[in-house]
Image 1: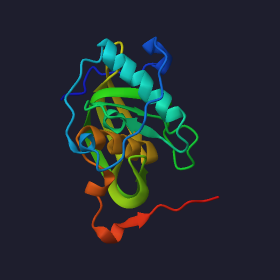
Image 2 (image 1 turned 120 degrees about the vertical axis):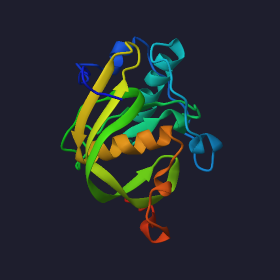
Image 3 (image 1 turned 90 degrees about the horizontal axis):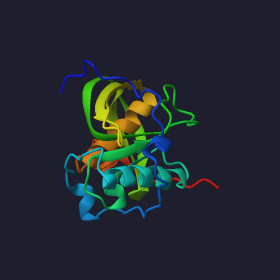
Image 4 (image 1 turned 30 degrees about the vertical axis):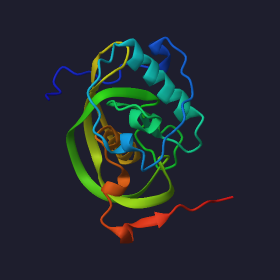
Length: 187
């Protein structure tokens, strides 16, 4: 996929979806939808716009959540929401956004880092991901193609959600059992 002619997010916000999202239950591994690659979607379809709004609503009521993909709410589709705003590890921040049919176009500067997931609530793991990333995708509602350039923590979040849409969990990316840990609970 070429990224020439793609714009950045261009001021897109979840409010442009024109629908109010509803909070959906998050499914946990080993739920089968989490291990199936999702099909591409029509980003202008009413059900995709509703799903996008629901992903944002669910993410916003989930403490510590910086991303949520359609498979995590039981829908086998290539749609996910990300928002790393206010996270202490975030440097580049594009605010709250949803992408459909996203693909990594460029990836570089690989680094290991700890990840967790709402669908794997008791574990974290060390995963090697690109810390410089270019992603191409489509905005829900308008169907506008976008090209997002990011780095650091936001790049990690995007790769994590793109993996969900491909039927992969962070556990599929760890180097081995020695890189998986019990999630720490802080009071």
